[in-house]
Length: 406
Image 1: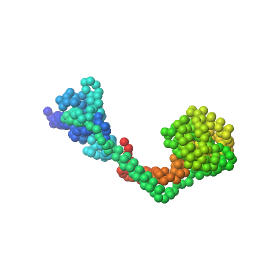
Image 2 (image 1 turned 90 degrees about the vertical axis):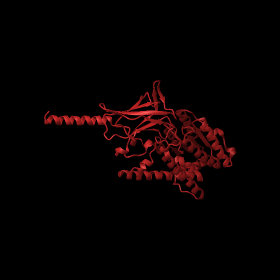
Image 3 (image 1 turned 45 degrees about the vertical axis):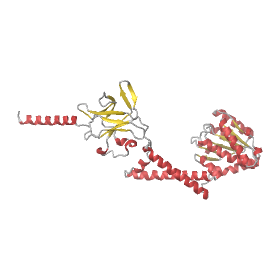
Image 4 (image 1 turned 180 degrees about the horizontal axis):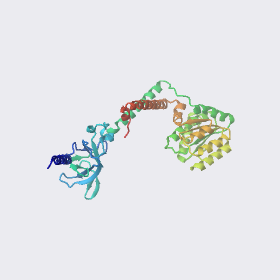
């Protein structure tokens, strides 16, 4: 064999030796742990990322309920996926650019046996083994035991608890302040105009028409509308002005009747309350709208107040009442209907102004404190967004991590 033949032989020998060494190198750092932050039934198999990652490798995970086998294939995963940095809810936030600190994992949530798939039993010991294949070579880990169990606390949601607690303390603090002194709330034109609208109806001797939206009592917009109705009913009782309330279903009607009756009692005019003035006009969208339009045309109310969640009937109602020359005040959190109300009504409560109306009208400390606390919480969120955006420029992600939800 000449000199060049020896060179070729040595190159081939070294290459084959490296391939054999690579094939025989075991997987390191293999552990089988209980999956955190759940009610059990899952195991997490973790291992170190290889120094040299196969481009077309596949991890195969095998499971058995006995250390002696038989082992069944429970899943496969590509060698370039399943990094721990991609699952911060399980492993926390890690540096994906440092391979030594970013292992790989696979979640096992079933036991594959001879009788088909089954769930992982809590408290039972299972045995797992990992194999890595790249098409030419393979390596295998030792058999590692693991047991699943229930977790009492979901630590991944600890930030949610802390943030919710902070906002709750903020609201309670403002309620305490509201009990000691008056809190400032910016002027809301639509609510300031209520007295004007009710006074005009009283002077003209015409009724006030209050129209609910089409949502039921489970919706916050309907609850807010009922609260506003209570304040309006108290004023109409004092002014001895007729009040008509149109409801979309019997439950809203019943709640509105009780609210109006309570307001008349508080005003000292229980004899003026007429339950027939609070009624259901229709349970379907356009039958409800048609019946309400008939009331507008026949009774010609001097004040038309629409509060709640509205749909396509909003423009029909507001245009019909506008022909009567009535003062119209609307409030809704249906953003698709706000343009129609702004165009056709004299005053419009925009979105959350509908929710703030109860606190604005009553000046009750609990409502005022809750409103101011929520506003301060929103201001803090806006500040965090601005600061977080600025810090992200310098790749500082602590605020992003703090406010991540899982």
